[in-house]
Length: 522
Ligand code: GDP
Image (cartoon, rainbow, N blue to C red):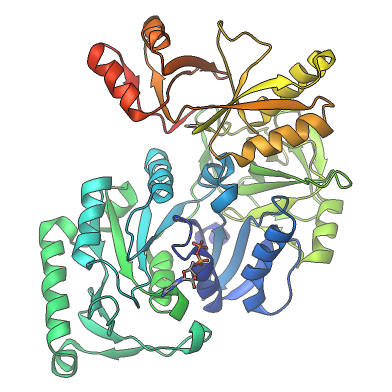
């Protein structure tokens, strides 16, 4: 399918402040912005787009989240899916990664790998998502390029394959060496990065004359990396064992065109998605999509819900009536998109790799499959990810026990929070688990306003979680003072520890205890 071949759908994984918003703006500057699915409002001017999202998010708290920015770059249609970070880091952030075909790992040159980057990278590796690395902020003092590459090898077991290399150290940046054609690309300061500067390239010979020592050193350093397994190898990138590395400065728009060119050249295009029976659904079969995120309006006056779905096959046309594979009920997309269209450019058609935002989608849940025509298709539901925050939930009003139970079950089935129980805790006070604390806020809000059962949440001090492999060993963990085992609604036994030290102590005492790192399951 020609339309699918043109698509590159990716997400940027990074730690807050590495420059994701800046990079997003810089990418869009090179391109023609087609549409922003999920942007609730926005002005025509491009520079407004991203900051408008952020302003809206700030002003309205957590109710608005952009989902995807679509733009054309040459013949390619690029879909950049947003991975919420900062305060709204949550399970949704991970789920976005089930809707992309590749990722760009954005690092701050002064900081290297940071906690949130590591977590997101783990999910990419687990799901087999290939990663391109962009080392940002090279215009100001930071760490050595070699040291940053070394960190990728040591901490991620990921071979760095530099495609550009900084000439002049961070803070005294002169440009980059384009490794594949051995040319020098001069760094030009554009005013605030607001314009796309013409690239100024010099051949290796000219660069040796004009740039001198810095250029020679860059070539030597690159050789050190390539000689130890960093030779460019597209297959190793696709397998997830190596990562192409680029250096740049998003705020000055330097290195960004390289990144786009690389995405076009290298990043995987949409592939047939495998259904629950194990059959890949051909890209040119009738329309199908899966819902990877549902945004509930937090404003009680507008109980609106927007469902974001990634198209997997066929063409989506506005107004289509599709079937929800979970409920077998029809879902009309017509009204939804007219409303969308008033506020944003209307999405008339969408192809595999694209994201569609469906408003009035109260019938849709995360993990649902949508399709048109026959035969029916259903894709596997989305996995649960390793939670990091835990809280005991109790009904604030004991007379509302029934509503409480109903609400808790519903929120768990929607994946708003994970539900953990154990015999010793009983059903009356289950434990909510979440990737980010915002999930608790959403859950508490919905329990009160939708299920009429306000909840009290008491945080538990656990921070380390593993999967308990053998249920017979449960007592070993429960006996510890700083640990317990709770069973998640999907049947996974989670061993929870107050800290890493408690876990290591228990393992030392009971070397037979089998615990597994948990990234995602299901
Ligand atoms: P996010 O939290 O990852 O979205 O990061 P932002 O895009 O908001 O950037 C965080 C800060 O880093 C802002 O002050 C940016 O201006 C700054 N920043 C982003 N890219 C660069 C860069 O290439 N060089 C420098 N010096 N600063 C940058």
